[in-house]
Length: 471
Image (cartoon, rainbow, N blue to C red; front, side, top):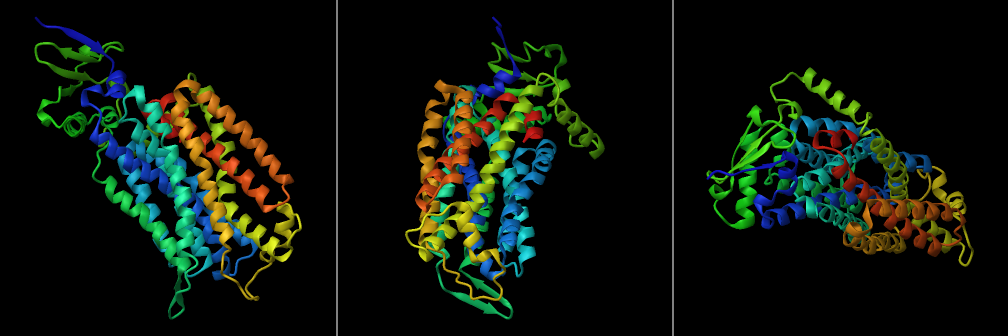
């Protein structure tokens, strides 16, 4: 007797129950964890570099502002580029490109001989970082069963926490070193070594990612059915330790007689094999199409997110993401410099209270420092205050995945945005470095949690061919 069961392609791709869950998913999570950890490295490393680089390049406060803004500007310009690349060439290619660009810009930054070249390279660091942070969530999410995907993506918040916790420890270990190798007019000191190591991290992660496949969801929608089958067979073999040939999906076909919204996935009881029928109307463009047609399709996708039923979601997600990240990334890059200024003020004027404006106005870096002696030593308080910022995220990083299923996205978004906004306003009234670090830690913990929640929402709210346009 022959039995037929009907499923949707969406259900098949989201549940992925036929591949099992095990070794492949664990390895994938580790690599994606490292990628998101690296975005923490890249975002916050500029803040630790600024105090020392200000001596190397005789930087004024305006120069410090330009250097701090360069990665943020790169992030702003990089979003749509990575969306296009991911849609045309695939998630893995775009993610690898972002990692290797980050590595190249980071390594070259370590030997940059002047200020403006260093600023340009930090711009490309930010350009690459936004590609990693925007793509790692969908890349990981498209491999996950829908029933646990929400929690798996929520645990990625811990990766960011790991990155911003390890970074100040790494800086504390390297930057205080006193070596300085001179070669003609070029010098290589501890600051250069710190930047070099930060640049090597994405290089090593990118090499590791080369051994992972493209997501089967993208391959199916791109018309690469045989490649998708091979990826699913790989997942099945690693998870179940059974031969790839035992995987119950035999082929993916474009058989149009089954292209119904309700029944594109068929199971023939006699054959014991799945047959996936792909709807050609939503299929991804073939690779052999002209670039012009690809760009037209990309524009069509972008326009789609500004039409119902995505219009309201797009407006809300874009507004939340803009308001959170604009303040979050800016303050995270500025916090180490602010810690340094508080430390110097309290050393010069012990026992006196001071606001952020007071310590900024009294700091000698308001003037160009090329003509005065430059103390390249960073106070230890800068490192352990920055380390505290990372530790402050641990409770929220655990709270989010454990309670996301019960409390939902809305609760975490409202809670993180409202409380972090109140904390940011309260920073105008601080009078000491202790108050500054307390409020900074609360702001960092809640805002980073909110940013991660938005990334999780994008994976759930938007179909594969649209979520990249939004990032």
